[in-house]
Image 1: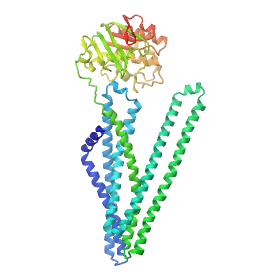
Image 2: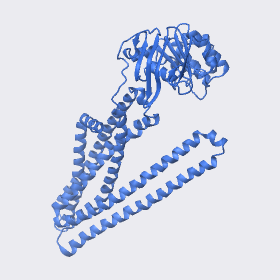
Image 3: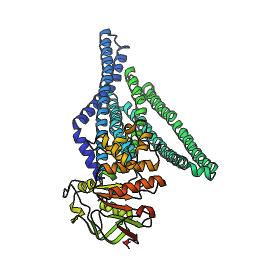
Amino acid sequence: MKWQVRELTNIIKKNKKAIIIIFLLIVVINILNVIAPYLLKLIIDQFPTNIVIKTITILAVIYIVVRISIVIVHAIKNRLTNRLSNNMLNELRDKIFNKVLTMKLKDFDKFPSSDIYTRLTVDAENVKTLFSDNIPVILNDIMHILFIIVVMFVISFKLAIIGFITILSIAIYSYVIVRKLKKIQKVTIKKRDLENRQFSESYNKSKLTKLFSLEKKNIEKVDKLLDEELENRKKYINVNTLLWPVGVFLESVGMYAILYYVLNIQTGISLGTVYIFLYYIKQCFSPLKEMFEQIEEIQNAQVSLERIDTILKIKEKEDIEKGLHISKLRGNIKFEDVTFAYENKEILKGVSFEIKEGEKVAIIGKTGAGKTTLSSILMRLYPIKQGKVLVDGHQIEEISIKSIRENITYISQNTYVLKDTLRNNILLEMQNIPDEKILDIMKKIGAMPLLKRLENGLDEVININRLSKGELQIIAFIRAIIHEANIYIFDEPTSNVDLRTEKMIQSIIDKISEKSTVIIIAHRLATIQNVDKILELKDGKVK
């Protein structure tokens, strides 16, 4: 919670002037809202006693000016509040986004992408709502009710006691009902989340549903959840139905008590005074209900702040510039007694091996043996627990992350592509690379059929659903070649391709290995033919 207090304080300090102005505008609005009915009281009190047209006219004009002023000030306040909350939303999202992009990969493992998306959207919006709606509305409602109570006591102490008891009764009742409604609403939201999860699972695993005739079972599950949600919504309606009539009844009791007091106990109270007390009591019910609803919403914002806090409190930051800047690594790699663990699960146990510049090496082993972990360590995605990793004689921690990743190209079995053109997917922000060079590489590796199949050629926006896994893999290899790295890591490069594409990829790897150090992580025998060395990982060690 320390981050929340510190960060909110920083946000408030940064927008201090706007917050003060908004607060003052809320004060002005509530003063005017209290003055307006008081002016009507004065006008009403003029009629039975001494009809002074000029006085009534002046009061009527002031009343109209006050009402117009309320509208104008309210509009200004809303504009400033929305501008402030949107600025804060932008700042908060910027902090989250920048934090995520600079996190170390071990921190990425803690958060599914859906969680990050929720922090950037729903949770950030909840915090925005805290400043745009929740806090201003609560301030406005509290001031409104307090100003009304103060004016009532100024006008008539005894009538104010009746009015205060009435307002307090409505407040207690509204609080109890709103709390109950919010509890029901939370249960409804949970039910809806379960429905979404069940439907999403059934939809995404539609083949499994069809093949094993699970339609009826899945429909029954969803129907049960829908029925439970419906029952909960009925309960909400039943409770909510009580709020208004009981609130009106309490208002009516308070109004009756005032009228009874004026007509039977203390006569002589002016008609305007009776009017303003009845009006003020009537004006308190909606703000009280609204205020308690906002208090519940603030609790939601608190939960959102806690969830955002889990990301922003991460202290470690990946500094890719820190360390030795080496423009060209030759590719001499040495692991000395390297140990690595994911949290408490040890994957590598004293691994030692050496790869010389220009060698083509295959790393094999069962699933989970640590093959991909070796490549992740080499690319400085994860720090080792103990031991040494040397690249060209330098300890890998001494070399800047930027230098390491500029010299290493990694291709996995799952090709990473952007929703962008083929050209931009190949270049990845590289400048001054002519189309002729891309086309020349595609000709050399036999990838021109892929280009011809795309209607717009290099300008075609990649749609992964319209390309085969083999074609996507070819795009990854074109990208790797054009980036001209000195160390290449291929992680199961032919696992998802047909025989023709596999032969093409093997040919590409052979050409790349003529000038670079190549590491191939593989299961298939065909992939590891013609290598200089084979390393087998077993039980966390190199056999």
